[in-house]
Length: 326
Length: 290
Image 1 (cartoon, each protein chain N blue to C red):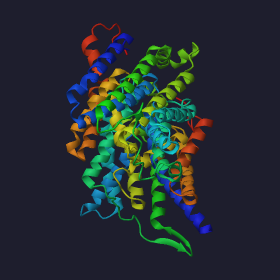
Image 2: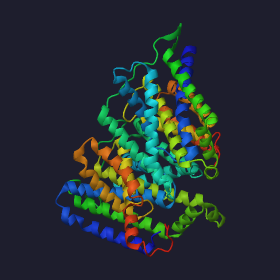
Image 3: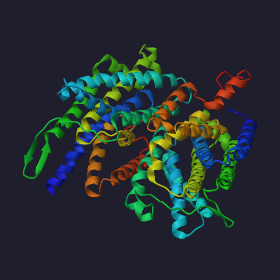
């Protein structure tokens, strides 16, 4: 377990570097778009890491929550004329509600069952969004949603034509989300999870309620993920169920594998590396997903603790007291 | 009306029998090694594609030969995957999640490899048997009957293997008590790889059987993965008998819901049933915790 001070330092370092990136790439819209995507996925992946790495819940519904949030925000802003700035929070709230509904039966189950139920949420989301129910709510069925209102703030409309303001909007949101996650890890929640992971029986005997903490973390991460989905929807301006394909799911997983599961700021580094690799591989066409798949397989075997784990091994291996520490 | 319902029941039975074969394979891996295979659906498609390739060879003209050749290929493939990808992770504390990740990566790799090699278009296999039993409005193809009996035969064969062969007995021993099995000299690592290989054969065979009725597509395995998974959890993870009952319940439920409400509802209803079952009985119909 890394100490909190080091996590904070790393996080500050990462965000300091990211903050000045537009100085170098600000002129190229294409690269700015990729950087914005990196920011979005860094939040989603960090949430997943919080659930899976810290809380030890095998949730595979992260992409589903993201899609639920994005559709909610788009529909709410289109149907009720709610400004996107508020719609994203409504989307977050709604996704958190869905998260709690999924979590309530799910968190009483054991590891692999949770994976099943959450992944099943992912799998049935596509027929629901495409089918009669979805069309009744206004998901646009198979066609998807094609014109979603852009984000406006204090009379200023963000457009993809000038990506730098958008970049800093996403930057602020991502920083805020990462600070929230950091606070969770540092708070007694983090300690409770550590205790639960080490020995659930013992921690429960000491009065740590596994269910309560797990449900809370489920609600929090689905809120953040859904909200990010809302931001994404208003940024790209169109949505379809293509997002539910296995590609995005595995991309997120690569982010976690590269960053290291349970090595918090790692997911953010992982997001930037993975999205960059993904873009670099795009000339490969149909061979790109194959390469991504192979990458997961190789990385899990070769780099099981991710980049952060590698750094830890390189720089502080000798100082560790126990030979097999976390 | 009465014939329609008979059709629905028959289709439920036939799908249920193939699901049973595949769910037993999935529950076997979980029961023995606690590993979770996300690439299970891709192995299903692999079975279909291997059969498709074999039928392309000039000397192959019967399903008997296809099964005879596909089984060892699938067995070796499963064994190799376990040894190369799953076994090295087993010594880690967090190996469960790592196994899920690596098999998910493998699934993406395989599915897209199929797409590149075979193209995105559906492939079909020749029917296993021609002809049908007909009586008035009643229609039952020989192929369906064949699929049903082959699946049941496969499950019985597997049962015989578990109860009567040395490897089968060591598989059961490891499932009951891994540490104890190791103490009495059962090669645990080999048993893990063997169960993975056997489950690959079972799902691959299921793929060959169902590919005649439906089609083989690169991404077609995901549906099967979720169904096999739902059945496994529904019946109780690690419980083979529970998986059998659950497979037929799911097969029936699916064909009745598909007939009455339309195909898009099947997954939704399955999920609702699963959630309700797990809420009332978290270990599934016949599962034990642990």
